[in-house]
Structure formats: C-alpha cells, structure tokens
Image (tube, rainbow, N blue to C red; front, side, top):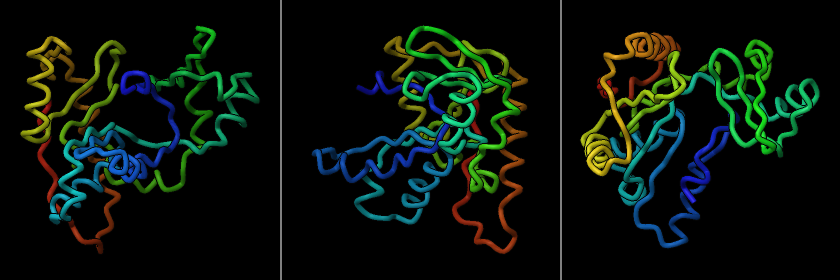
Length: 212
C-alpha cells in the first residue's frame, strides 16, 4: 500500500488529517510524509512535549517543497490546454518543466512558467523549503533525475538510513558528488527563511543540515 501510493501530484494534501484514522485503526506509531508545513507541526509538538500525540508521530519524512498549486491547475491548464484529464495522471515531477505521466503510458511536458499563476497564495509565505523539522528531508533537486537528495537530520533518521543501506534497499553516494544540488538546497532554504516575520517568536531552533 505504501509503495502503491508513492507518486507525486503537485497539489496540497492535508496529510496530518489522516492521524485520527490511523489511530482509530489501531496504529501505535505513525509515520508522516509531508512538506515543511506539515513536518514543522510534528517538530513543534515534539519540542514542546505535546504528550501522546507527539510520541505516536514517531517518524517524519519531509519533502523539499517551494510551492503547491491550486486544484484548478488540473482543469484550467492541464485539461484545457493539453487535454490531460486529472483522473488520467499517475505521476508528476518538476525538472525545469512540469513533467506528467498518464495511465496510457504517455509522458507530457508543460512549461513551468504557465503553472506559476496557480500557486497557492499561502505558499508564497512559506518559511521552510527544506523541511527542517523532519527526521529525514528528501527531494528530487538538481540536474539528475535518477537520484534523490537526502538530508539526515536526527539520530532516528540516521538509524533508518543505515538500516535501509544495510538491507540493500537503497543505494547511496556522498552529497559532495552533487555540489550543485547541495548549493541549490541551501540557497532555496535560506530564501524561504527570510520570510520569517521579525515580530514572530523564533520558535524551536532549527537542526543543522547534514547532507548525505
């Protein structure tokens, strides 16, 4: 079930709302996969010792994210201009252009500049491109489409990555092999943090980046 849902659609999904259903289904520990806006919730709860809820949210995997798009992008852009129906989309990616895979096996590209008009307004005030409160932050940043950049932020995240490598489930290489991606990561993370209001509480300190 987890692998079947491991696809991307660049529109907002309130994943934290699934917490109640997971607990009602008997889950004692819950892993959250989400963008910085979601990962910051679990990090804030844990830093403030928010009891049972924080303990049950035992693993957070954050996705690098600069913006989401309003749902109208599917009908007004993809379907109207490119004849791609929302129900036919199985995967999306952004690599300088909007990449779309459909159920019939076809691949489509749309200029990214056409999508900017559909940016969710709240995303223009996002403070956390790099999901700094997650145990592991990850995203397809940089020129290579065959690798995913992974930032290990906590001891739990390091234990998980070590176990995945030990069991041969993932292949790794040093972040130094992709200096351009690491530089871009830092640049986008710093740009998003500049949006933090001067009058706002600083909140929990960010965990320093550790690039693997």
